[in-house]
Image 1 (cartoon, helix red, strand yellow):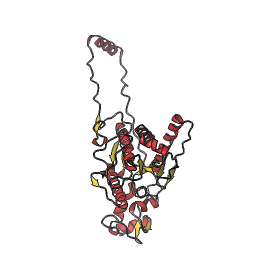
Image 2: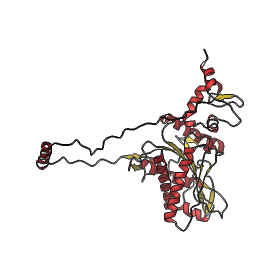
Image 3: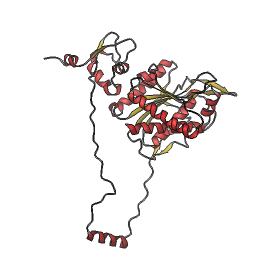
Image 4: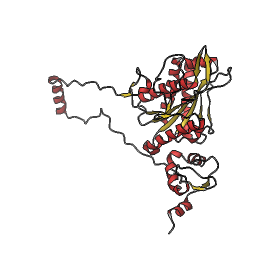
Length: 359
C-alpha cells in the first residue's frame, strides 16, 4: 500500500524551488491562487519546509491539484417582505373595520448603526453605516512609507511636505467611506494622533506604526516584509482566506518636476482579480474626468508590476495606486487641497464598489 506522500506524488505536479522563491511566489508562478492553496501546499510539504514555512533552493515541492471547476452555489431568494397571502372577502371586511376602530401602534424609527474608529480623529471617529452595499467585503489598506521613512519630500516655503502624510490622509478617507457602506476594513499603517486632516500642509511626523501596534523598522526590506506579513496573517484568519478580500496600496509618486501624471495602477501579472480590481477603479476615474474635466483626457494606466515586494508577496488580490507626482506643481495643488483628497478617496471607493458587484 502506497504512503500518502507517494500517492500525492503520482497525482500532483512537482516543481523545484529557485533562488528568491517563497510559497506565495511559487504558487503564483504555477498558476495557483495563494489564498486558496497556501494551506494545502504546507500540508503536502510539511517535512520539506522550514519552521517559518520557508523553501530550500533546489528541492522539489509538491503542488496542490488545481480545482478545474468551482462549485456554483444557488442562493434561494426569499419572498418579498410585501408579499401576503390572498385574503377572502370576510377577512378583507374585518381588516377594514379594525383599521377604523383601532389605531395602529406607532413604530419608532430604527436607530442608526454607528462604527467607532478613533484613527479618523475626534470629529469623524463615529461612522454611520449608510448601507450594506459592501457587506461581506474585507479590505486591507496600506499607505506608502511611514514611521522612519516619510517617502518623497518637497519644500513649500519653509514647510516640509512628505508623501506618507498625504497618502495616509487619502487612505483614512477611503477607509471611512468603505466602512459606511458596510465593509470590514483593516488600516495597516496607522498614526495614533493624526486623524483625517483638512489642512493644506500636513505636519510631518514619524510616529506611524504597523498593525496592530508594531514599530516600523528602518530597513526598507523589513518594512515591506512586516506589512506583507500583517496582511497575509489577517487574510488567512478571515474566513480561512475565502470570500471577497482585497488589498489597496496607495503611494504618491516622485518624478521629474515637469511631469504631470494621472492616477495610475499596478497589479500582479498572474492575478485576474487584481487586474479587474484596477480596471474597475480606472473606469471610474475615466467617467469622473469625462464629467468634471471634459477638456482634459484622462491618461492613467493599468499595468502589471510583479517585481514590487508587496505586489509579489501578498495573498489577497490587490491594486497598487499612484496618486500623482509630488514634485510637479500641478499635481501638488491636487494633493495639497483636501477637497481633492476627499474626491480621490470617493472615486476609489466607487471603483471598489463596482468591482465588488462583479464578484
